Image 1 (cartoon, protein in one colour):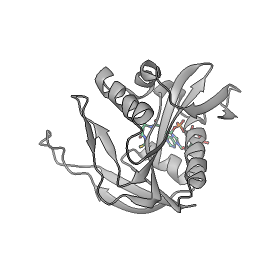
Image 2 (cartoon, rainbow, N blue to C red):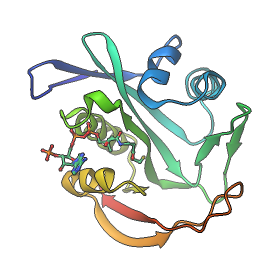
Image 3 (tube, helix red, strand yellow):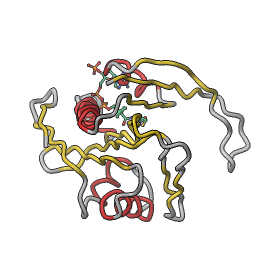
Length: 179
Ligand SMILES: CC(C)(COP(=O)(O)OP(=O)(O)OC[C@H]1O[C@@H](n2cnc3c(N)ncnc32)[C@H](O)[C@@H]1OP(=O)(O)O)[C@@H](O)C(=O)NCCC(=O)NCCS
């Protein structure tokens, strides 16, 4: 679909996810087999509401990263039971989200994440979206988002998870980019 090179000169191939990518996806983003199976089923065969594109990046045939373009408000997460928790409130057809943007630890900082994000931005433009949003609790990801040209517009303290009694200490940083 598109091609850039890592700093070591290896070709980065970005393409849509396809059936059979589950094992490769687990290798780069973790998650239980049930979670990854369900996510791939949802984005590939069922094409769930709000999923505009689900991309993967390969280096020498190995899947090393992934990123999704969603419509804002259609965020979905997959529980440990493999069931999809889909939030469809207030889907905005003009605004997308860069979601589930992950590069395998040993392939980070070689340009793979930027290549995937540029592909998502191009897809968002091709879909005619007016704005792309994203957010992260990870300072490295926030640095990558700033470098891509996303504009930071706020931070929220992270709430303690339902299953976790410890108070939220980190912040989720929110970004947007007008297309
Ligand atoms: C965010 C992520 C996908 C970036 O992938 P990547 O392949 O490492 O990104 P790139 O190599 O293209 O880096 C682009 C820029 O981001 C910034 N950056 C990336 N990692 C960084 C780090 N650890 N510390 C500081 N800046 C960092 C740098 O500015 C970098 O450019 P440079 O290397 O020329 O200085 C990756 O860090 C990741 O998988 N993180 C865990 C998952 C996550 O938090 N996802 C975001 C929420 S959806």
